[in-house]
Image (cartoon, rainbow, N blue to C red; front, side, top):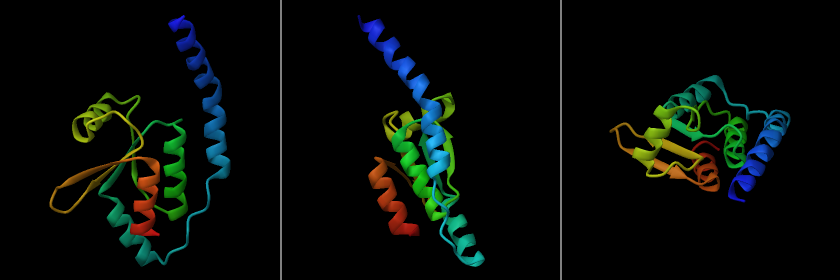
Length: 128
């Protein structure tokens, strides 16, 4: 019975993934406009950020849409298909749970932020 349930959810994920990704493409908002010098400062600040994500995760899509709306160039790291990123997420953040925003400061300190709502609130506070 357990294998039937797993197979059902894998099939469901396989069928729904293209629709979720298409929906993301069609509904992603345009970036807010900033003067070039202000955008350069934002790009410099986002160079210290990385988002660990799964491509078809609805919560990751939510964060990516907010990043697009704010015009942020944050590195995306695939924790599902890249074992190196998955291991870094497990060792640094403590769990393979996405989305997770890695925030590095100038002193080399790292903060791992989970939960799409918290990540979006932090991005809005910092860059909104």
